[in-house]
Image (cartoon, rainbow, N blue to C red):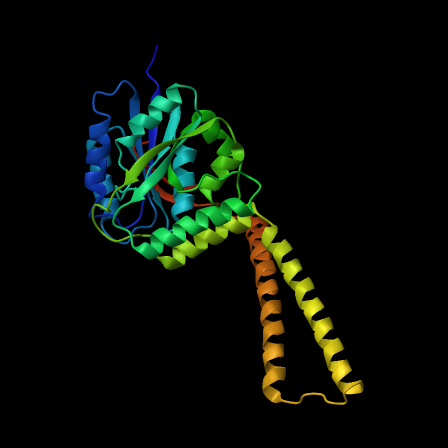
Length: 321
């Protein structure tokens, strides 16, 4: 009976300072392991020497595969590409910065062997991160969970193990604005968690600044909930009621008391308030329309410039998915 295969998917962007240590830590965990292991690194359009280092690692290790994107397509798309190319009976997603300890994967595999098809890492502590990032992340996960009909675990990132059947189910979800951790929850299957303490970044700088965090948050909210549209409707109704009440007050002042207040400042304040609410409502609708626009174009999720270590070891170029 042949050994089972474990695929380790690692999205990478400008990680030249850490990528060699990442492979060293990962391979050290699975040295003399009872399963065969393949390491799939997705170079997401890095602008430093990350790809050159990955190429050296792949040439020196037959278990290493490298997917080199034609340009930067984003973290969630890189994860998707790794799952598309993974051949393992189970697939593990882990970032290259070593904040998620590779040793925790062994605990995930234990849970998988007990019958769980999704094992996600739940962060008990987050070392080396600012209070602002910890607080906003905590609030976001809870807010997103309250907004969606699908149960999304809180304090959980993309670090997880998924069974082959889950990976195959994910391939049937071609949407463009991807929130992978939400999609994994959406497909279902038997899920559990492994708790761990998130470590400081080994080297380099975070690849998720505030702008990217906000985009990820938007993808999570607008891809899994239409409640913002309901809130927009509620806001419109509330503004209409307030406007109607204000109109009655004005009419009473004019025809009963014959004393209507005049003033540019008050009129402008009311006008700006109502216009602001309208713009917020239009903006929410625009988010959904924009996502519809992206879907109907049906462009490929990503374009691969080069593949290393796949099949018979020969390089393949210009794969489109």
